[in-house]
Length: 239
Image (cartoon, rainbow, N blue to C red):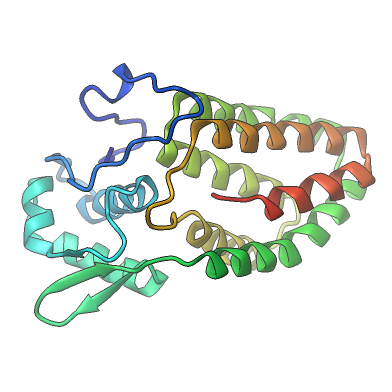
């Protein structure tokens, strides 16, 4: 399930149509993939981020840059640089002379992230609900539709990207670049899964449906419903 460019899908992944209520499968093996030579480091970073969300990079496991480089068909250097970036984000830790270990998330950490995100985003969204026009909100419907499409396909990493894009588009209405940077960083960390806890297609579909419901409430300027939906969205957020 590792991606080397947006929209790419491993061989056979789209042929699987699992039961909506069944856990989505995640392999502990990273399939061999090759990246294009341009923007190698950026593509490797994107692929590793997708692997973190998919569960292909297993929490607690140790990975070496040369081994991952061999899987991607690149040298160890861009992999090492990308992993060091992930270490700064708090996704992995450096193990001297051995490689990088994927850090394990805890339920408490995810609850705390959801709480901080709610403290940050709820008042912003309520203020925007009072000031942004219905036409501006309606223009975000394709963003909400993208989350629904990824959820219906069971595409965990694709859903994570679409989910962040939706929230970023909403918050961008505030015109505050620092808000976007902080909110996106928190959101990305909240998307790293708990070890041994599978992501279910039905959960993604329900989460995506909340995006569409929120947009309709924003278009209607129904502040009571907006606040309720946003708070519930964070309270039940798995991604």
